[in-house]
Image 1 (tube, helix red, strand yellow):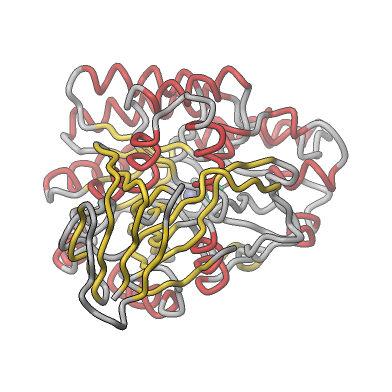
Image 2 (cartoon, rainbow, N blue to C red):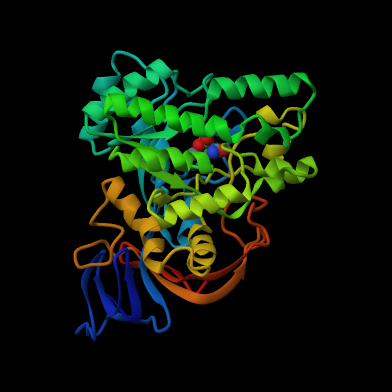
Amino acid sequence: MILIKNGKVVNSNSIENHDVLLDKSTIIKVGPNLVSGNKNCKIIDAVGCYVLPGGIDPHVHMNLSTPLGYSSDNFKSGSNAALYGGTTSIIDFVTPKRGENLDYALSSRIDEAKVSETNYSFHISLVEWHNNLEKQIKKCIKQGYSSFKVYMAYKDSIGLSDSELRKVMNIVGKLGGLLLIHCELGDKIDVLRNSLVDEGKIEPCYHPISRPAETESEAVRKAIDIASTEKCPIYIVHVSTKESVDHIRIAQSKGQPVFAETCPQYLILDDTKYKGEFDETSKYVMSPPLRKQEDSEALWNAISDGTIGTIGTDHCPFTKSQKEICRNDFRSIPNGVGGVEHRLALVYTYGVLTRKISINKFVEVTSTNASKLFGLFPAKGVIKPKSDADLVVWDPDAENIITASKHHQNCDFNVFEGVKTTGCPKIVIKNGKIVVENC
Ligand code: URP
Ligand code: ZN
Protein backbone atom coordinates (compact mmCIF):
# COMPACT_ATOMS: atom_id res chain seq x y z
CA MET A 1 0.00 0.00 0.00
CA ILE A 2 1.15 3.54 -0.76
CA LEU A 3 -0.40 6.78 0.47
CA ILE A 4 0.59 9.98 -1.32
CA LYS A 5 -0.15 12.90 0.97
CA ASN A 6 -0.28 16.70 0.60
CA GLY A 7 0.11 16.91 -3.18
CA LYS A 8 -1.97 18.77 -5.75
CA VAL A 9 -3.75 16.07 -7.75
CA VAL A 10 -4.08 17.12 -11.38
CA ASN A 11 -6.49 15.60 -13.87
CA SER A 12 -7.33 16.99 -17.29
CA ASN A 13 -10.35 18.73 -15.77
CA SER A 14 -9.46 19.34 -12.13
CA ILE A 15 -6.79 20.24 -9.65
CA GLU A 16 -7.36 19.39 -6.00
CA ASN A 17 -5.42 19.26 -2.72
CA HIS A 18 -6.06 15.57 -2.27
CA ASP A 19 -4.29 12.48 -1.01
CA VAL A 20 -4.13 9.32 -3.10
CA LEU A 21 -4.23 5.81 -1.66
CA LEU A 22 -2.94 2.91 -3.74
CA ASP A 23 -3.39 -0.77 -3.08
CA LYS A 24 -1.34 -3.08 -5.26
CA SER A 25 -1.74 -1.84 -8.83
CA THR A 26 -4.92 0.17 -8.29
CA ILE A 27 -5.89 3.59 -6.96
CA ILE A 28 -8.43 2.93 -4.23
CA LYS A 29 -9.13 6.36 -2.73
CA VAL A 30 -8.63 9.99 -3.71
CA GLY A 31 -9.66 12.67 -1.25
CA PRO A 32 -8.67 14.98 1.60
CA ASN A 33 -6.99 13.76 4.78
CA LEU A 34 -6.79 10.09 3.88
CA VAL A 35 -5.38 7.54 6.31
CA SER A 36 -4.39 4.07 5.27
CA GLY A 37 -5.11 2.09 8.44
CA ASN A 38 -2.31 -0.28 7.42
CA LYS A 39 0.94 -0.09 9.36
CA ASN A 40 2.94 -1.35 6.39
CA CYS A 41 1.67 1.43 4.16
CA LYS A 42 4.41 3.57 2.63
CA ILE A 43 3.70 7.28 3.04
CA ILE A 44 4.97 9.68 0.37
CA ASP A 45 4.94 13.36 1.30
CA ALA A 46 4.17 15.23 -1.92
CA VAL A 47 4.03 18.69 -0.37
CA GLY A 48 4.84 21.34 -2.99
CA CYS A 49 4.43 18.77 -5.77
CA TYR A 50 1.81 17.92 -8.35
CA VAL A 51 0.52 14.37 -8.53
CA LEU A 52 -0.06 13.50 -12.19
CA PRO A 53 -1.40 10.49 -14.06
CA GLY A 54 1.57 8.57 -15.52
CA GLY A 55 2.53 9.89 -18.94
CA ILE A 56 1.42 7.96 -22.01
CA ASP A 57 3.61 8.33 -25.08
CA PRO A 58 1.45 7.27 -28.02
CA HIS A 59 4.26 7.22 -30.58
CA VAL A 60 7.57 5.44 -30.03
CA HIS A 61 9.75 3.12 -32.12
CA MET A 62 11.86 0.89 -29.87
CA ASN A 63 14.18 -1.53 -31.62
CA LEU A 64 13.10 -0.29 -35.04
CA SER A 65 14.58 -2.39 -37.79
CA THR A 66 16.10 -0.37 -40.66
CA PRO A 67 18.41 -1.28 -43.55
CA LEU A 68 21.26 0.14 -41.41
CA GLY A 69 20.44 -1.81 -38.27
CA TYR A 70 18.16 -1.27 -35.31
CA SER A 71 17.38 2.06 -33.67
CA SER A 72 19.63 2.35 -30.63
CA ASP A 73 17.01 2.04 -27.89
CA ASN A 74 15.46 -1.37 -27.45
CA PHE A 75 12.35 -1.97 -25.35
CA LYS A 76 14.40 -2.31 -22.16
CA SER A 77 16.58 0.80 -22.46
CA GLY A 78 13.94 2.98 -24.10
CA SER A 79 11.23 2.14 -21.60
CA ASN A 80 13.66 2.68 -18.72
CA ALA A 81 14.39 6.16 -20.09
CA ALA A 82 10.65 6.75 -20.42
CA LEU A 83 10.13 5.98 -16.72
CA TYR A 84 12.81 8.49 -15.70
CA GLY A 85 10.84 11.11 -17.60
CA GLY A 86 7.48 10.25 -16.01
CA THR A 87 6.08 8.18 -18.86
CA THR A 88 4.64 4.91 -17.57
CA SER A 89 3.03 3.66 -20.79
CA ILE A 90 4.26 3.62 -24.36
CA ILE A 91 2.54 2.74 -27.60
CA ASP A 92 4.89 1.34 -30.21
CA PHE A 93 4.26 -0.15 -33.64
CA VAL A 94 4.00 -3.56 -35.21
CA THR A 95 5.41 -3.15 -38.71
CA PRO A 96 5.09 -6.36 -40.70
CA LYS A 97 7.30 -7.05 -43.69
CA ARG A 98 5.39 -6.99 -46.94
CA GLY A 99 3.90 -10.45 -47.39
CA GLU A 100 3.89 -11.13 -43.64
CA ASN A 101 0.69 -11.91 -41.77
CA LEU A 102 -0.37 -9.18 -39.26
CA ASP A 103 -1.03 -11.78 -36.61
CA TYR A 104 2.45 -13.24 -36.93
CA ALA A 105 4.09 -9.79 -36.89
CA LEU A 106 2.04 -8.87 -33.82
CA SER A 107 3.05 -11.91 -31.82
CA SER A 108 6.75 -11.44 -32.72
CA ARG A 109 6.59 -7.81 -31.59
CA ILE A 110 4.83 -8.77 -28.34
CA ASP A 111 7.74 -11.13 -27.67
CA GLU A 112 10.27 -8.34 -28.27
CA ALA A 113 8.41 -5.95 -25.98
CA LYS A 114 8.21 -8.31 -22.99
CA VAL A 115 11.33 -6.75 -21.46
CA SER A 116 9.64 -3.34 -21.38
CA GLU A 117 9.72 -1.59 -18.00
CA THR A 118 6.68 0.52 -18.84
CA ASN A 119 3.23 -0.64 -19.77
CA TYR A 120 3.01 -1.01 -23.52
CA SER A 121 0.67 -1.49 -26.41
CA PHE A 122 0.86 -1.29 -30.20
CA HIS A 123 -0.53 0.32 -33.29
CA ILE A 124 -0.41 -2.01 -36.28
CA SER A 125 1.15 -0.74 -39.49
CA LEU A 126 -0.51 -1.68 -42.75
CA VAL A 127 2.27 -1.69 -45.33
CA GLU A 128 0.44 -3.05 -48.38
CA TRP A 129 -2.99 -3.85 -49.69
CA HIS A 130 -4.13 -7.43 -50.33
CA ASN A 131 -7.42 -9.27 -50.36
CA ASN A 132 -6.79 -10.93 -47.01
CA LEU A 133 -6.20 -7.66 -45.20
CA GLU A 134 -9.78 -7.13 -44.02
CA LYS A 135 -9.82 -10.53 -42.35
CA GLN A 136 -6.44 -9.87 -40.68
CA ILE A 137 -7.50 -6.41 -39.48
CA LYS A 138 -10.67 -7.92 -38.00
CA LYS A 139 -8.55 -10.43 -36.11
CA CYS A 140 -6.33 -7.67 -34.68
CA ILE A 141 -9.38 -5.73 -33.52
CA LYS A 142 -10.76 -8.87 -31.89
CA GLN A 143 -7.49 -9.17 -29.96
CA GLY A 144 -7.86 -5.56 -28.75
CA TYR A 145 -5.64 -3.76 -31.26
CA SER A 146 -7.82 -1.26 -33.09
CA SER A 147 -5.39 1.48 -34.11
CA PHE A 148 -3.58 1.03 -37.40
CA LYS A 149 -0.93 3.09 -39.14
CA VAL A 150 -0.15 3.89 -42.73
CA TYR A 151 2.68 5.84 -44.33
CA MET A 152 2.19 8.14 -47.31
CA ALA A 153 6.00 8.45 -47.55
CA TYR A 154 8.58 5.63 -47.88
CA LYS A 155 6.72 4.23 -50.90
CA ASP A 156 9.50 1.77 -51.78
CA SER A 157 9.27 -0.05 -48.45
CA ILE A 158 6.26 0.50 -46.22
CA GLY A 159 4.30 3.37 -47.84
CA LEU A 160 0.93 2.98 -49.53
CA SER A 161 -0.23 4.34 -52.89
CA ASP A 162 -3.29 6.62 -52.85
CA SER A 163 -5.54 3.83 -54.08
CA GLU A 164 -4.26 1.48 -51.36
CA LEU A 165 -4.77 4.23 -48.81
CA ARG A 166 -8.39 4.62 -49.90
CA LYS A 167 -9.07 0.89 -49.60
CA VAL A 168 -7.43 0.71 -46.18
CA MET A 169 -9.43 3.71 -44.95
CA ASN A 170 -12.63 2.14 -46.18
CA ILE A 171 -11.99 -1.04 -44.23
CA VAL A 172 -10.61 0.50 -41.04
CA GLY A 173 -13.57 2.94 -40.99
CA LYS A 174 -16.08 0.13 -41.58
CA LEU A 175 -14.57 -2.02 -38.81
CA GLY A 176 -14.57 0.82 -36.25
CA GLY A 177 -10.80 1.30 -36.07
CA LEU A 178 -8.67 4.43 -35.96
CA LEU A 179 -6.08 5.05 -38.67
CA LEU A 180 -2.82 6.81 -37.84
CA ILE A 181 -1.24 8.47 -40.85
CA HIS A 182 2.30 9.60 -41.52
CA CYS A 183 1.44 12.45 -43.89
CA GLU A 184 4.20 13.27 -46.36
CA LEU A 185 3.85 13.10 -50.15
CA GLY A 186 6.30 10.27 -50.82
CA ASP A 187 6.41 10.53 -54.63
CA LYS A 188 7.07 14.27 -54.64
CA ILE A 189 9.76 13.88 -51.96
CA ASP A 190 11.47 11.11 -53.94
CA VAL A 191 11.69 13.35 -57.00
CA LEU A 192 13.07 16.24 -54.92
CA ARG A 193 15.66 14.23 -53.04
CA ASN A 194 16.87 12.41 -56.16
CA SER A 195 17.31 15.61 -58.11
CA LEU A 196 19.19 17.22 -55.21
CA VAL A 197 21.59 14.28 -55.05
CA ASP A 198 21.98 14.35 -58.87
CA GLU A 199 23.16 17.95 -58.45
CA GLY A 200 25.71 16.83 -55.87
CA LYS A 201 23.70 18.18 -52.94
CA ILE A 202 24.33 15.33 -50.55
CA GLU A 203 24.68 16.99 -47.11
CA PRO A 204 22.05 16.77 -44.34
CA CYS A 205 21.07 20.42 -44.95
CA TYR A 206 19.28 19.15 -48.08
CA HIS A 207 17.12 16.77 -46.05
CA PRO A 208 14.61 19.53 -45.08
CA ILE A 209 14.79 21.01 -48.58
CA SER A 210 13.75 17.63 -49.97
CA ARG A 211 10.76 17.53 -47.60
CA PRO A 212 9.34 21.07 -47.67
CA ALA A 213 6.35 22.07 -45.53
CA GLU A 214 3.87 21.69 -48.38
CA THR A 215 4.80 18.01 -48.85
CA GLU A 216 3.37 17.50 -45.38
CA SER A 217 0.40 19.86 -45.52
CA GLU A 218 -0.70 18.64 -48.96
CA ALA A 219 -0.54 15.08 -47.68
CA VAL A 220 -2.61 16.12 -44.67
CA ARG A 221 -5.21 17.72 -46.96
CA LYS A 222 -5.33 14.63 -49.17
CA ALA A 223 -5.62 12.25 -46.21
CA ILE A 224 -8.45 14.32 -44.74
CA ASP A 225 -10.30 14.31 -48.08
CA ILE A 226 -10.02 10.56 -48.59
CA ALA A 227 -10.93 9.87 -44.94
CA SER A 228 -14.02 12.02 -45.33
CA THR A 229 -15.34 10.05 -48.30
CA GLU A 230 -14.35 6.69 -46.82
CA LYS A 231 -15.78 7.60 -43.39
CA CYS A 232 -12.61 6.69 -41.53
CA PRO A 233 -11.51 8.36 -38.28
CA ILE A 234 -7.89 9.43 -38.63
CA TYR A 235 -5.06 10.49 -36.33
CA ILE A 236 -2.30 12.47 -37.99
CA VAL A 237 1.06 11.73 -36.40
CA HIS A 238 3.88 14.21 -35.86
CA VAL A 239 2.21 17.31 -37.30
CA SER A 240 4.95 19.88 -37.88
CA THR A 241 3.59 22.74 -39.99
CA LYS A 242 1.20 25.64 -39.65
CA GLU A 243 -0.63 24.76 -42.87
CA SER A 244 -1.22 21.19 -41.70
CA VAL A 245 -2.78 22.62 -38.54
CA ASP A 246 -5.04 24.85 -40.69
CA HIS A 247 -6.33 21.86 -42.69
CA ILE A 248 -6.92 19.84 -39.52
CA ARG A 249 -8.75 22.69 -37.82
CA ILE A 250 -11.10 23.15 -40.78
CA ALA A 251 -11.87 19.41 -40.94
CA GLN A 252 -12.56 19.29 -37.20
CA SER A 253 -14.83 22.34 -37.43
CA LYS A 254 -16.96 20.37 -39.93
CA GLY A 255 -17.26 17.56 -37.42
CA GLN A 256 -14.90 15.15 -39.18
CA PRO A 257 -13.13 12.79 -36.77
CA VAL A 258 -9.56 14.00 -37.33
CA PHE A 259 -7.15 13.82 -34.41
CA ALA A 260 -3.67 15.25 -34.39
CA GLU A 261 -0.38 14.74 -32.59
CA THR A 262 2.82 16.73 -32.51
CA CYS A 263 6.19 16.09 -30.85
CA PRO A 264 8.51 18.13 -28.59
CA GLN A 265 11.15 18.45 -31.32
CA TYR A 266 8.69 20.41 -33.50
CA LEU A 267 7.74 22.61 -30.55
CA ILE A 268 11.20 23.37 -29.19
CA LEU A 269 13.70 23.08 -32.06
CA ASP A 270 13.76 24.62 -35.52
CA ASP A 271 15.42 24.24 -38.90
CA THR A 272 18.47 26.32 -37.97
CA LYS A 273 19.78 22.99 -36.65
CA TYR A 274 20.51 22.02 -40.26
CA LYS A 275 23.16 24.74 -40.57
CA GLY A 276 26.70 23.48 -40.00
CA GLU A 277 28.90 20.43 -40.43
CA PHE A 278 27.73 16.87 -41.05
CA ASP A 279 28.50 15.62 -37.53
CA GLU A 280 26.12 18.17 -36.04
CA THR A 281 23.41 18.41 -38.70
CA SER A 282 23.03 14.65 -39.30
CA LYS A 283 21.75 14.33 -35.72
CA TYR A 284 18.58 16.18 -36.74
CA VAL A 285 17.66 14.03 -39.72
CA MET A 286 14.09 13.04 -38.99
CA SER A 287 10.90 12.98 -41.01
CA PRO A 288 9.18 15.34 -41.16
CA PRO A 289 12.18 17.63 -40.66
CA LEU A 290 12.39 20.51 -38.20
CA ARG A 291 10.50 23.59 -39.38
CA LYS A 292 10.42 27.35 -38.77
CA GLN A 293 9.69 29.11 -35.51
CA GLU A 294 6.31 30.29 -36.91
CA ASP A 295 5.37 26.64 -37.29
CA SER A 296 6.24 25.90 -33.66
CA GLU A 297 4.08 28.83 -32.58
CA ALA A 298 1.17 27.53 -34.66
CA LEU A 299 1.61 24.10 -33.05
CA TRP A 300 1.49 25.56 -29.52
CA ASN A 301 -1.68 27.49 -30.45
CA ALA A 302 -3.17 24.30 -31.83
CA ILE A 303 -2.42 22.47 -28.59
CA SER A 304 -3.92 25.27 -26.60
CA ASP A 305 -7.18 25.38 -28.63
CA GLY A 306 -7.48 21.57 -28.81
CA THR A 307 -6.79 21.11 -32.53
CA ILE A 308 -3.77 19.04 -31.57
CA GLY A 309 -4.77 16.66 -28.80
CA THR A 310 -1.68 14.61 -28.09
CA ILE A 311 2.07 15.01 -27.79
CA GLY A 312 4.08 11.90 -28.63
CA THR A 313 7.83 11.73 -29.15
CA ASP A 314 8.30 9.54 -32.25
CA HIS A 315 11.21 8.28 -30.14
CA CYS A 316 13.59 6.61 -32.57
CA PRO A 317 17.23 7.42 -31.77
CA PHE A 318 20.26 6.35 -33.77
CA THR A 319 23.83 6.75 -32.55
CA LYS A 320 26.42 9.09 -34.09
CA SER A 321 28.07 6.19 -35.87
CA GLN A 322 24.75 5.00 -37.29
CA LYS A 323 24.05 8.49 -38.62
CA GLU A 324 27.62 8.84 -39.89
CA ILE A 325 27.64 5.78 -42.12
CA CYS A 326 25.86 7.90 -44.70
CA ARG A 327 28.22 10.85 -45.15
CA ASN A 328 27.90 10.64 -48.91
CA ASP A 329 24.13 10.75 -49.20
CA PHE A 330 21.62 12.36 -46.85
CA ARG A 331 18.93 10.03 -48.25
CA SER A 332 20.45 7.03 -46.47
CA ILE A 333 20.87 8.60 -43.00
CA PRO A 334 18.55 6.70 -40.67
CA ASN A 335 15.61 8.95 -39.83
CA GLY A 336 14.67 9.62 -36.26
CA VAL A 337 15.59 11.16 -32.92
CA GLY A 338 15.19 10.27 -29.26
CA GLY A 339 13.08 12.12 -26.73
CA VAL A 340 10.95 9.69 -24.74
CA GLU A 341 12.69 10.77 -21.52
CA HIS A 342 12.18 14.50 -21.94
CA ARG A 343 8.61 14.87 -23.18
CA LEU A 344 7.01 15.84 -19.89
CA ALA A 345 9.78 18.18 -18.75
CA LEU A 346 9.90 19.95 -22.12
CA VAL A 347 6.14 20.40 -22.41
CA TYR A 348 5.92 21.53 -18.79
CA THR A 349 8.79 24.01 -19.12
CA TYR A 350 7.99 25.46 -22.53
CA GLY A 351 4.21 25.06 -22.35
CA VAL A 352 2.97 25.39 -18.77
CA LEU A 353 5.63 27.70 -17.35
CA THR A 354 5.40 30.04 -20.34
CA ARG A 355 1.60 30.04 -19.86
CA LYS A 356 0.94 28.72 -23.35
CA ILE A 357 -1.05 25.89 -21.76
CA SER A 358 -2.52 25.14 -18.35
CA ILE A 359 -1.38 22.33 -16.07
CA ASN A 360 -4.66 20.54 -16.90
CA LYS A 361 -3.96 20.79 -20.63
CA PHE A 362 -0.48 19.41 -19.88
CA VAL A 363 -2.05 16.29 -18.36
CA GLU A 364 -4.57 16.09 -21.18
CA VAL A 365 -2.00 16.14 -24.01
CA THR A 366 0.65 13.99 -22.33
CA SER A 367 -1.66 11.35 -20.89
CA THR A 368 -5.48 11.58 -20.85
CA ASN A 369 -6.19 12.07 -24.54
CA ALA A 370 -3.90 9.24 -25.64
CA SER A 371 -5.63 7.02 -23.10
CA LYS A 372 -9.05 7.93 -24.48
CA LEU A 373 -8.09 7.58 -28.13
CA PHE A 374 -6.27 4.28 -27.76
CA GLY A 375 -8.67 2.36 -25.55
CA LEU A 376 -6.89 2.70 -22.20
CA PHE A 377 -9.42 4.96 -20.46
CA PRO A 378 -10.47 5.02 -17.61
CA ALA A 379 -7.75 2.64 -16.43
CA LYS A 380 -5.08 5.12 -17.45
CA GLY A 381 -4.75 8.88 -17.99
CA VAL A 382 -6.74 9.84 -14.90
CA ILE A 383 -6.35 9.77 -11.12
CA LYS A 384 -9.51 8.35 -9.63
CA PRO A 385 -10.59 5.28 -7.66
CA LYS A 386 -10.35 2.02 -9.67
CA SER A 387 -7.87 3.49 -12.14
CA ASP A 388 -4.41 1.99 -12.49
CA ALA A 389 -1.77 3.12 -10.02
CA ASP A 390 0.45 4.76 -12.64
CA LEU A 391 1.41 8.11 -11.12
CA VAL A 392 4.06 10.77 -11.11
CA VAL A 393 4.92 12.98 -8.16
CA TRP A 394 6.09 16.04 -10.08
CA ASP A 395 8.51 18.50 -8.53
CA PRO A 396 7.64 21.78 -10.28
CA ASP A 397 10.80 23.58 -9.22
CA ALA A 398 13.60 21.13 -10.04
CA GLU A 399 15.94 22.61 -12.61
CA ASN A 400 17.85 20.49 -15.11
CA ILE A 401 19.88 20.83 -18.27
CA ILE A 402 19.36 18.04 -20.77
CA THR A 403 22.59 16.30 -21.66
CA ALA A 404 23.62 13.00 -23.21
CA SER A 405 26.10 12.49 -20.39
CA LYS A 406 23.24 12.10 -17.92
CA HIS A 407 20.30 10.81 -19.91
CA HIS A 408 19.04 7.22 -19.78
CA GLN A 409 18.30 6.89 -23.50
CA ASN A 410 20.76 4.61 -25.29
CA CYS A 411 22.31 7.18 -27.60
CA ASP A 412 25.64 9.01 -27.54
CA PHE A 413 24.06 12.39 -28.21
CA ASN A 414 20.85 14.20 -27.40
CA VAL A 415 19.04 16.50 -29.83
CA PHE A 416 17.94 18.58 -26.82
CA GLU A 417 21.52 18.91 -25.51
CA GLY A 418 21.85 22.04 -23.39
CA VAL A 419 18.10 22.73 -23.23
CA LYS A 420 17.11 23.91 -19.74
CA THR A 421 14.07 22.45 -18.06
CA THR A 422 12.20 23.21 -14.87
CA GLY A 423 10.06 20.47 -13.34
CA CYS A 424 10.78 16.75 -13.24
CA PRO A 425 9.46 13.55 -11.74
CA LYS A 426 10.44 13.14 -8.10
CA ILE A 427 8.77 9.76 -7.80
CA VAL A 428 7.33 7.56 -10.53
CA ILE A 429 4.92 4.77 -9.69
CA LYS A 430 4.01 2.11 -12.23
CA ASN A 431 1.40 -0.55 -11.48
CA GLY A 432 1.51 0.47 -7.80
CA LYS A 433 5.29 0.11 -7.45
CA ILE A 434 7.83 2.89 -7.04
CA VAL A 435 10.07 2.59 -10.10
CA VAL A 436 11.94 5.92 -9.96
CA GLU A 437 12.72 7.85 -6.79
CA ASN A 438 14.46 11.18 -6.22
CA CYS A 439 16.19 11.39 -9.55
O1 URP B 1 12.15 10.31 -38.66
C1 URP B 1 11.35 9.57 -38.12
N1 URP B 1 10.16 10.01 -37.82
N2 URP B 1 11.71 8.31 -37.82
C2 URP B 1 10.92 7.32 -37.21
C3 URP B 1 10.20 6.50 -38.21
C4 URP B 1 9.00 7.24 -38.74
O2 URP B 1 9.05 7.76 -39.83
O3 URP B 1 8.00 7.35 -38.03
ZN1 ZN C 1 7.14 7.49 -36.03
